[in-house]
Length: 159
Image (cartoon, rainbow, N blue to C red; front, side, top):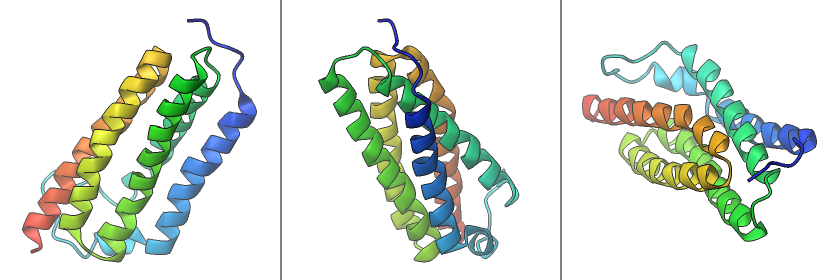
């Protein structure tokens, strides 16, 4: 399937939604302060790593979604893929307030498991529309799995 022209306006909007949403949630919950309150499992990165990694991942997510929007896939396929992408963002943005705001690592882990499942659905649906869009989500999925390890480790060490 050939792609249409790259949609810069859509890309900028999606960056605003993903990066802006993630930044806003972070500012409301102050994860850096709360992160230090927990006993950490092995391999826990320092605080500064998280905003750097999330910024890159949000950019990759926005780029992947932009490739889907600009594809020649059917309207229904794009709508379904982007609907799952929206669910993914809602779960993504809800994890931080549950983990850091409510300080509920187990509940946050459940949200993260749902997020991982939805991310697989998004990755596969994006890949079927534009393989590059699916590949762009692989680092995001890998980071979520690592975050799951950290989240569950924090739960076990801090209960």
